[in-house]
Length: 348
Ligand code: PHE
Image 1 (cartoon, rainbow, N blue to C red):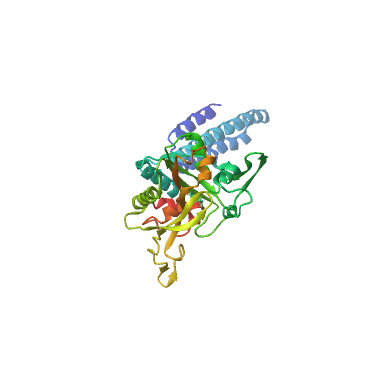
Image 2: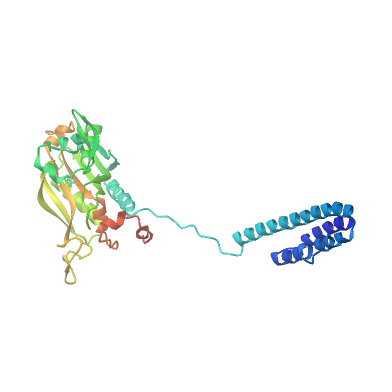
């Protein structure tokens, strides 16, 4: 059927010149519409004899199917083309990949490490899941001692070791003191142990997982002036020369004498009040950084250090606490550091 062959050729030609869906619609009407070319041929069937009609009818049906296939293929092609053009518009400005930043606490840890490095302290990391022995007994806190209650502790569901007891999530970084003494064996020791610590508290200035940094200095003739000098150096470097620290007599089982170190609060500038309201963070002008003192001889003994020959000092401060006290940080609720809203990091 000549007209059928011509029709397919013409259609192919028309489709080559079809570049959008409007044109394709027009082509479709021209070929497959009620008054389209295919139907025109169909209408002529009635003039044919019965035999011819059935033969031509089959051919026309085949022709119609071919026409539909060609038009559908073109439709697919146009759809792909449109998708492609929509996705890649080379005239649009490029998409900027957002720059990440470290968490505020990570910045603080880096800075603390740097400050102590200047004084010759090396940074160590010790286990976060620790034996009770290293967290308490070796630090002069036997299991029945009431001071142990101060370190409310998360216990791990683990078998008990007959020498080391149960396992805990480190309630303080002081276990690192013992581990460092056992590692170094013979002083001098100048260590800064920065790690995660855990206690079951949750309020504006406590979160159950926080960080501490623990300084330890052991050598011959080490005394309390070295302790004061070092903490003062840290405070001036980290907070600026206008921040003040004070040592308050205190008690820890693992140091003697012991102190608590406070620093003036950056939110209320040491006043304890913001306007006519008590400062939400510190309540009285000073914020506790943590404890310090001269290492107790029993602790030196646990670490295998000759307590006749060597003396030392140690401190343990909260990383979040010192970070929040830094000028310009202005974070008054510790919990926002860990509620996964990255807007807090985007500011720094
Ligand atoms: N481990 C004590 C605490 O978490 C702090 C401390 C460290 C005190 C070292 C004295 C010496 O509160």
